[in-house]
Length: 194
Image (cartoon, rainbow, N blue to C red; front, side, top):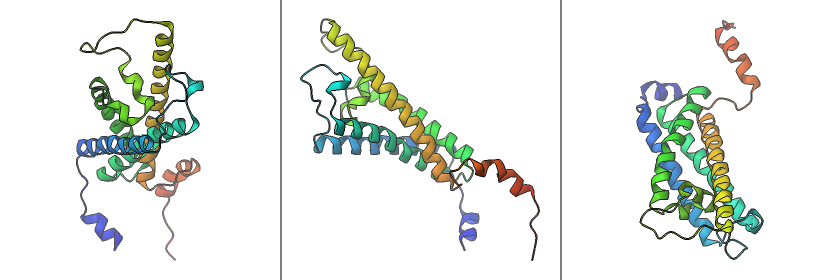
């Protein structure tokens, strides 16, 4: 019966799947970020400057988990909507959904809306927007910008890994590397009929 259902189902075009995956990643990231705000995970332990020793453990856990799991969902949604059954194209759909999300995050960062996604994405807008007043540059500010940029790079790369893993999960293929060495051999080998 499952075969009949799959035979009659037609996948959506690739770009529709990628856009929906990117929007899903943004939505889940926002939800995780807002939950972090609700439980107080957004607060730094220090008074002003962002240094890694001033970040509380619960803040780091929410930000890392949010960066990762938001894109796992985005990659999974993109690959499932596209109807991809092989791991490689499914992972590619997840990675492309991640790529589509980056300009969206940059636009949200330019508008000041990435604060709700957690502090890891604060480095998307490293400079001060032209409409905001500029503060004098101090060594503390330079260190905070550097640390923010490092955290954002880590969050973006974790997002890429999450998107690829989400796409792989959506393909339905086993998530072990030994499967891929034998997959083509098993398909090419004629099956014995008992």
